[in-house]
Image 1 (cartoon, rainbow, N blue to C red):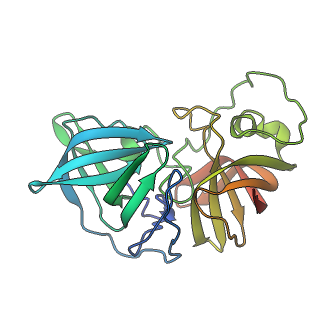
Image 2: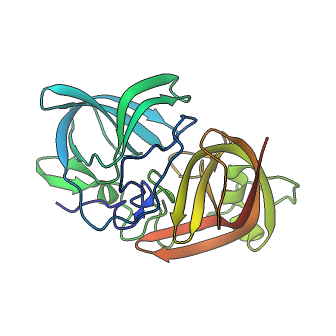
Length: 265
């Protein structure tokens, strides 16, 4: 069984295993705010259970899992999970009284897992990274920096010609990334998550309702030496567009916004 590390980095579910301690992360408009910057050095225990319910939300899936006779809620990065599957997951990040605005539901307790094992028919469980066909390089989700992407994504012809604008949408930045390379752009959106102190910078995940979840174009990451924004904030973000950015540890970003500044609206 090969384990999916958001752990290899603290980079997935945050990049550096964002979750080396019990933390409060604010996903999809929740109230959590505190995220540690410590990079994990040891693999956490893996727990197993049967999936009873699946609720997709903004690039993630909330799973009700039957584990040792009790029901547990677990949130993971988007993956092909179905009711009835047996999965493995870590419990490094526990959030209490977490409210998801996307689902309009409050969870008394929910684990945001970074190490996840998914079943592969009758054979041994397979890592989520392999199930998604992402090979060796990933982009980050929940993990902290972003969701998985191929290391050398094939640039598709933009659905529409590039247009110079005062402000762009998340989808447009993904679509026109080559045209925007090196430019300073402005984008209005909602903060999904903030991962602090990873590789000497903060990672701010932003969405505005545009983009395609299956193509991973509904989320855009902005980095800055430091930030004061938190999940759920409505902000105006500015920064310089970088493309095909490889941070190592298996984390590759077709597009990412660097040297960013944020203004809460």
